[in-house]
Image (cartoon, rainbow, N blue to C red):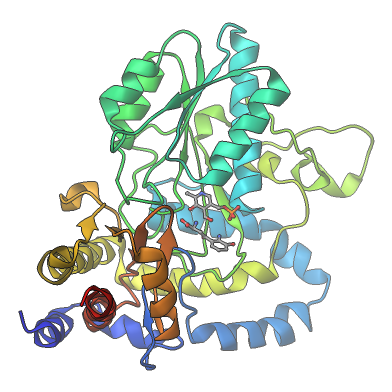
Length: 408
Ligand SMILES: Cc1ncc(COP(=O)(O)O)c(C=O)c1O
Ligand SMILES: Nc1c(O)cccc1C(=O)C[C@H](N)C(=O)O
């Protein structure tokens, strides 16, 4: 195939191509294929931060807490919930990092299950979960004297495999909606239903799916979820996480980091912790108001595009990447490590080859920026609103050049 011509045709036919110019750096020659680690910034962030400094912060000063900021974790949470998670208002909050939010919600769920039935002493967890999830669950198991039941994907985790691991000992299941390495999509609805039949709760990590694929937390009867906002929600490095707790669970769950912002009356400053009603009880300390500003700007853009168009382009981008890999890279020994069926794959593609570590280093030097993931994976994360088909074609052509140069 004439790659650049094909890419130009796809870009010309792309109904959401115009969003790309809203992003900083989109007019440079740099090829950015790592939107699932850190999304590009919107140009509008600059003016938003400027207004924030002169307005709500510079002029409003501490008054802005009363006027706006105390409610911001819930207002922004609801907006993420409605636009990206299929969550009705009142169930999503923005705070902390994903790791901290995950700890809080997982501990809350485990403690609740143990209180109802001490025999539920096992957490089911996938070995392919992101490291922070695995480390946190180990810590919680040690703290609470619980057992871990590790599931080994072979090569991917199946719904049947999860279902078979569930039983009267299962307290909570911790899984990723989209795995960070291969990009496989889990069947959230089916796994959640199976867990409920076994009397367990499920906590879903949505880091690689929020803002990338349609999510229906309420419809799928999800119990709890966490995710980050710096990948496909373009909130910027270290932007806060979101946490979702289904309204039916909120009153019964107590999270372990009891700070003043989760108190029923934070400004009474009285003795003793009394958790607030609703999602406020899942807060701990002062909300990261400044760090939410780029995310707020992005949500307006995301609302304009809509998740359906975003997903359609995500599928087209990953299909294109796989087609290029089959044609150009497979003859050089590259294997596609992501599911081939679009319905089973998120917005990133894993390309495997024993030399991918050095290839990634050489790509970075040539201003092509993917990720390397152990042991042999070149991972390309395609952000539908900011990635062009031309970028994918250019980036993978350089991969082919690098592999060819050393093979000859
Ligand atoms: C699936 C998943 N969970 C959690 C995290 C990390 O969370 P944190 O923002 O706390 O570093 C990431 C990425 O960093 C991730 O990919
Ligand atoms: N969160 C990250 C960070 O703080 C530094 C470097 C990379 C990251 C990432 O997001 C890694 C990413 N979650 C992954 O899936 O590999």
